[in-house]
Length: 584
Image (tube, rainbow, N blue to C red; front, top):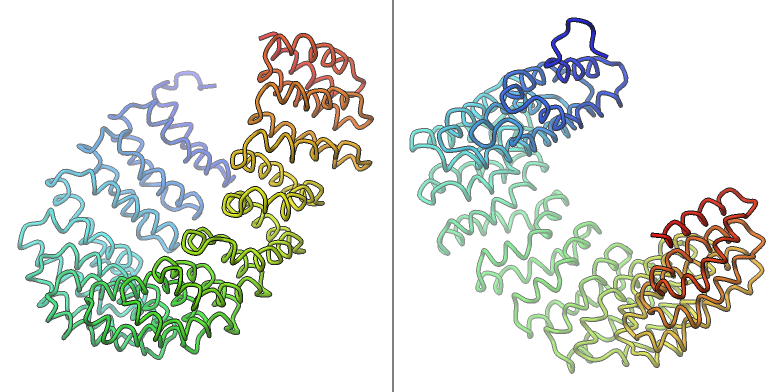
């Protein structure tokens, strides 16, 4: 309640002030999340003149609160009057981009970029570029860290003199005494190179690239790999060969595995930028070296690029140079390397065609399908559609089934859950006959899994299978097995029956519900377990909406009336809710 004499127009601000001064962090967080509501109440003028200046005074707060504030301000443009007045948000975000907590700074920079993208050229130069300069020349390193990603955003709006100045400021960041500043400059150099005119890249930015790519800190060098990619878009093929390629060579053999990891991660982009001749003459050997690297992390990163890189080279190169290494990777000591390969190896089948896939890849597929590590088998199974299109599933099915069964019975429930999600895909590939013979019973077994998430996924799996094989198939092969679970003594099986019926009812149609499902659900209304009875009420409510008012009145209402008089409060509640639904 407002105190006597208080100006009511000040209430939103005063309430915010009171809440932000509260010792309860959660209350302050909630207040910041409601800033948009307060801004709407105040209007655009007062938001600019009162709310935003006050927020600028609140920067000294818990990191959690500052993070949410930085996030909210990025979406605050409409509340201050649109792009014409968006610059009024910059001072708050400038302060937030200078705090010690990294996550707050990064979120503030993200919001600053969002605002810069809507600013007019005049405001971008007058307000945003001034902000960038202040950050880049600030005494505290955190401000300088935040300035690097902002240069590419503002560069195109500047005149020639300001552009030259911005290139000089960026150069200072790459030689900063603080490694964290140099890391930021190296990380965003690629974007700055893309923004700068080609004529200034060689004289002004290439020396920065040389400096960052040879920095004593490997955390700086590894981030210069992205700048290699950017330079290939600005330089002629001759300049790429003489100025970029040597750095790529050095990075491929860098003493730090983290640098080699980054090269592997961007290897395909580097190869595309260097061109087909360099890729053929140099990058193939470099890729093979990364696949054979001493560090498992590097091999893992390179393995994830196998199929993409093979698209850049000839079939002969794949068969003679890359596949021998791939065969070794399929038996690599690291399970993560094998898992990465398993997610990519299927992509080679379309490149090689049926005959060469059978000759060179099938053994690798089967080896990975029998891997002891579940993720390896899962990754193979999840990409089977690529092989199916080339050679058909029949050749894999004999080895596929044991792998599926092992995964389906894995002691880790998350593995079982993952394989359930792939079943509809496999069903579509294997066909109805193979599925009925080999996998149908397995799908029913999951309905009795001790883990609720598995039982829930199993019911959704049945629904997805019906979309693959059709309602007629479900009536013959799935629904009878689901209904038979009701006879189980364990009430969890009976509960699963109800859940499955509720899910399947949405796809099988009113006739199947009325003929096969509804009679059982009505019988379950007298189950001794209250949990079963109130779920019966919920299921009947769902069914009534599908079968229509005639059947609902004739067969469902009387049972719901009986449940509405049940001794259990929950049963009575859900039964009455279902009755209300019928009446509407």
